[in-house]
Length: 211
Image (cartoon, rainbow, N blue to C red; front, side, top):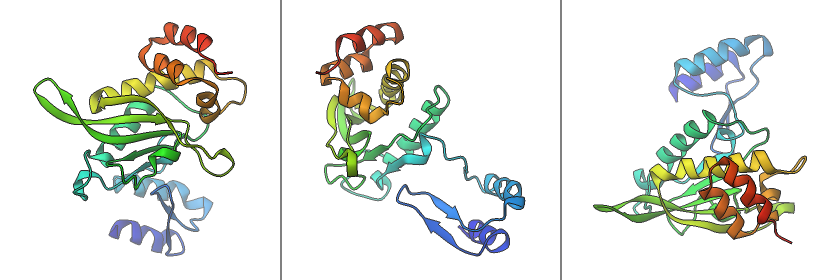
């Protein structure tokens, strides 16, 4: 934070702005000094590229700061972004919200993809995992997400969402958002897309469109 403050003082107007997406904006950096600013951000260990996945990623405090949380939401959010960004590219922001308990501080029910932290049974005991909801929204797209998967262990979460997003990219209609895509499909069809390989996902999507 001291490094970020020094950067803002020297290259910007000395102000930092916080966004609802848990990001920080260094205000009023001249265009001629953008390269210098991005190099210094990287030297601080901070990312500056607002990808469609990472730019709209939200997580509650998680187990590192809340006794109610069942999962380490912030660490899992970063791991999820690393996995998805390395394997596919989206052309518009995707709201992924991770919340560690039903209090839903990260508002998982109104996200494109909402993840509710839970303890799941695995061989040898309990592990951290998530229930998966999709299709939530606010404003003109107001809706509560529908649950399409339960008790998904954290290591299985990123591959499951990768399969779903690959199916979306392959099967969406022209200009169709992820919200619109999930709204157009039944819960059963969306579950099939999460479980299927790429060729199977296409067939499942064709069978599962909602009326």
